[in-house]
Amino acid sequence: MSRRFFTGLGVLALLLLIAGIGQLFLMRFRVGDIYPPYSTFRTDPLGARALYDSFASMPGLTVERNVRPLEHLGTGHDTALLLLGDTVRYRPNEEHLPASIVSRMNSFLRSGGRIVITLQPRDGAHVWDGDEEDETNRTVKASASGKHHGGTSTNGLDKVAGTNAPARPTPGVLPDKDEPKSFVSLTNWLDAAFGFIPVSGVATATVTTAGRDTGLPEHLACHSTLCFTNAGAPWRVLYTCAGQPVIIERAFGQGSFALSTLSYVVSNEALRDDRRTSFLVWLLAGRTQVIFDETHHGIEESPGLMSLVRRYGLTWALLNLLALAGLYIWRNNVALVPADVADEAAGADVAAGKDSATALGNLLRRNVPRAELLATCVAVWKRSADHGTRLPATTIRRIEATVEAERLLPDRQRSPERLYNDICRTVEKEGGATHGKR
Image (cartoon, rainbow, N blue to C red; front, side, top):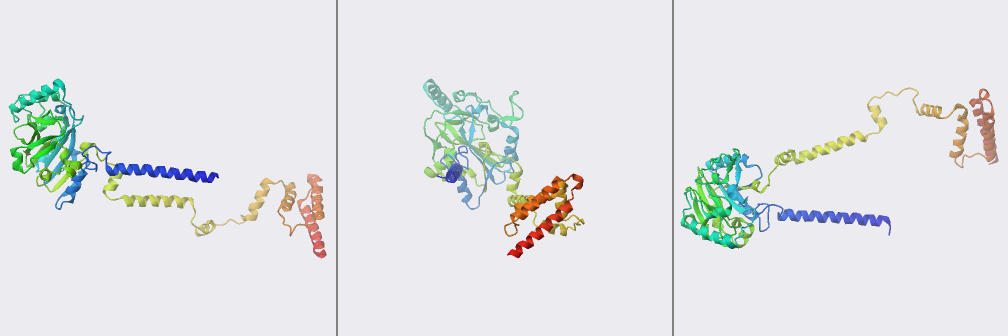
C-alpha cells in the first residue's frame, strides 16, 4: 500500500482518539462527578442538582449559585443561603472560620436572611468497635440524662470526638488567648459543640415536638454519626437520632439559622427515592430568593479578564477584535492591489533612464566582463533559439570562429562594436541565402 494511505489512516486514528477523549470529558462534566458531593453541579446520586433545578422551576423563586467568596455576600433580605454538604474535620470542635466570613454571615442573618448548613464528616463515618463502643454507650446514656441546652458539663461524646466541649461559649467571641485573632472558633460562633452517636449503616432521625409543630415529616434517614452537643438556649432541636440532636434551628436578628448533620435528604438520590417535600420547603422558610453556595466545595470564581468578558457579554466583541487583528496582519503582508497601480495612486515619481533595459545593462555590466560580453550573448542565443529561427550549422560555426578570432586579439585591439557588426552581417547574408533556397 502507498505511503499516502498509511498517512491518511494515521490521521483518521488520531481524530478518532481526540473525539473519544473529548466525549469522555463531556460525559464527566455532564454527570458532574468531578465536583465534590452535594454540589449542585453534580447530576449523579451524590449531587444536589435535582434540588437546584426543582427550586429554579418553581414560580416566584429566584435561584442562583454563589461562586464568589462569602466576604462579598450581599444583604440577606428575603434570601436563603444554602450550604449543602459542608465538610468538617474528624475533630469538628477544633474548626476555625475566618473572622471576615463570620462577620459577613452575621450581617446577612441580622438583615433578615436565612442560612441553612448541612454537614458531613470529612474523613468518613466513624467506626465504633470494641471498648470504644462500650464507652460510647455509657456516654450516650449520660448525655441523655443531662441537659442539651445550657450547662457547662462535658460528656463522653466530646471525648470520642477528640476534644472537650467549650464551657458556655459566646457567639462571635474569642475566649482563648492563644486563638488567632483573624479566626473564630466554629463552636464559639455556633454556640454549640459536636459529638458522635453510636449508629452504623442507616439509622432514623425522629422529629421532636418543636419540629412537628413546624410541619416537618416524622422521620428522616440518618446517614451520619455526627450530632450536636451543648447547644445554647436559643437553639431549638427539631430532629434527634439515638437521643442526640441532629437538626437544630434558631432565630438570629431578623433572620434564622438552621444546622443539620444530615445531608442525604437534599441529595439527588433522596429526591428520587425518599423525597421529603415538607422538609425541602422548610429549608427556605418563606424566602423567595435562594442562593446555593459552591465556595465551601472549593468551587470559586477567579476574577480575571475572561470572567469580566463573560459577565458583561463581551465574547463577540473580543472575537471581532481578533478578526480585525487578523485582517490587519494580512493587509500588511499581502498587497490587495497591483504594485504599479499602488505606486501611481501614491504619486510615486519614475526616474528617467531607470527602465528595464537600463536595469539589464547594469546587471550585465556588474557580472559580465566587457571583452566576454558578445561571446556570452552568442552562447545564450544558441541555447534559447528555437528550431524556426536556428541558423545552419555552417553559419553558427562561422560566427563562433569570428568570436574566437576576436578573443585572440590583444585587449587594445578588441572592439565589441566591430565584432557585433561582423556577426550581424554574417547573419543577414546567411539568412538571405537560406530564404532564397526555400
